[in-house]
View (cartoon, rainbow, N blue to C red):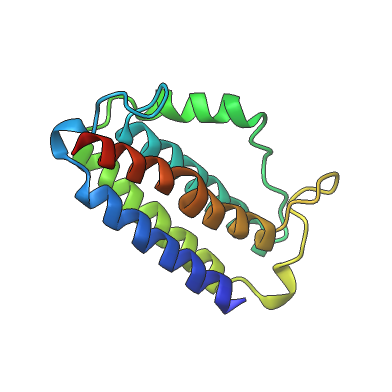
Length: 151
């Protein structure tokens, strides 16, 4: 599954390039519906961390706690990170992505299709594909569109 890890790395690189190019003065402005760029990063940090935690637990044979409803988890994430500075947010963003990569690089081949939860069809492979989609097809186009409108 190295091709998925490489795809994740490439998606993060492209995403990070756009984040780095985003006007510094606008990083905390609400320009993405109800969110700022900083809040998008916080949202990504918590999902990356959640998935890395799930993979780590799966490696040990433990079932991870279920995160609940997506919208609730998103809102809780934003609340937890709202007092963070841009510098802390950006550093956590880098660290959470690096951790996802480390967890997946050490995931045994036979665990890629293992279910995280007995009553759900969520697997490490499926979640990594979701992360790639999340970066490339959800948030990256939003960032590029806003950047274009700010010119």
